[in-house]
Length: 287
Length: 271
Image 1 (tube, chains in turn green, purple):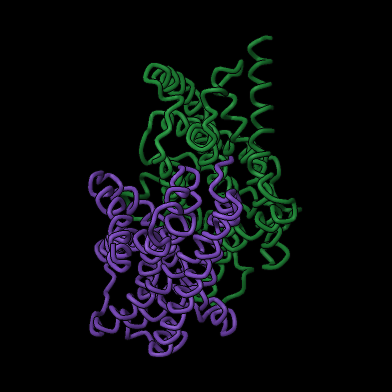
Image 2 (cartoon, chains in turn cyan, orange):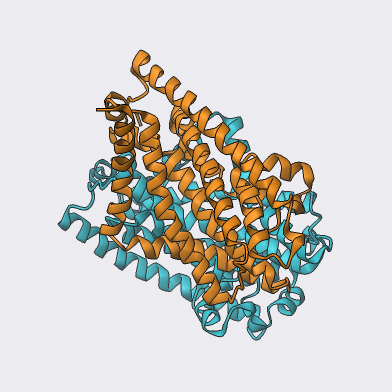
């Protein structure tokens, strides 16, 4: 079998396996309820906070800005954290990582496939969250006015970037014996704060804003908001990114994704080699 | 050995690894304070972005600190017997000539000590980073409220520990599911009365709802708009909840022990 075929097969089988792990712990109805409750209550926390202070309706552009960022952020939790969790799940919980590793697969693509499964469950949450926003909260989003090409391109690049960041985290997790539970959540929490998921990064102190500029999801979220809400809305709410045109944002995101791709391949190879040398692939710590 | 002495020694024995183990490896402090601080900070900046009055910053910081207790109850109390089953300890607990109640109490005491350090770190960070002004004018009542809230909360955790074990492999997902919805209905990041009387009243079954509300009223006495019920009533309800949860947890544990001995399947490790 050629390398490309093996990579594709590893990806496909891992996606199927990941989907089974994510969804077969209960019956489909309970899984569906579970998929609704978590994202909707998560966004409702922000909705109530917003309502308590502004007492205004949910059709204001700022509300849509916040809501959209929060919905897109679901992907950060599912993809980025999901890939690194696959290492923890397989090594510590199911204790199958060593068997998976010695099977004829491409481990890099296997982990990407596990991320893909989380992407699918994440998409379900995003669709439910956005559906709730549009139908119940009457978000001021007109489907006919969305810049669909910009939306599609930014989604593809943004999600690819998250998957590659997830692989970097997965490679780091492979080396860890302690605190690996917290790594994904720490990074996701930092991104929630620094990338302006629910507020414009202009609110952050200057030194934190600087960190936000260094993170690719900042540009992904801005591109998404411009595509869905229109550039005028996004520019008025987040002046610090107003100096950058759509093309510049796209190029920054593209560059960051390519860089992440190269770094993730080399870092992953190094981590994999070191894990084999030190016997970390079948390590169970019960930590 | 006298029953009472054995009970107390079991509590100490189960609390010991939690407290001493954490002191042996101090790196947890960074992860356990840094992680909740990130979410708390994000909510602080969200309030700042929508020009909320500064007292709401304090409200978020207190809520963020209390998330530590909720997470501890979910993951280190409610799910603990399930983890212990996975690690092979549960069968040993049940076979040991001591009370399961004492084992869970030891878990609660150990977890409470650790989590309090974490909560204090978040409060301190909130005070230093966001200049939150707390009032300690009613510190005695505050302390009483905190103690009763914790008794009720960890009593609920002890009850959940038995129930989660019966749920089997769904325990993980149930713990996961009980995070954001509880943050919402218990008003971790906004005054719970914003949800309306009946929702807030229903959410009061979770001890942190009233505990948090009472503590906020005492820490920020200049803002009576925060309160759902008066502090006196909230303390009374919390005391009742503490009693109910502890009694129920005793029944649940007895049932669990009986089931484990009769069927022999409860301690079975199956992934």
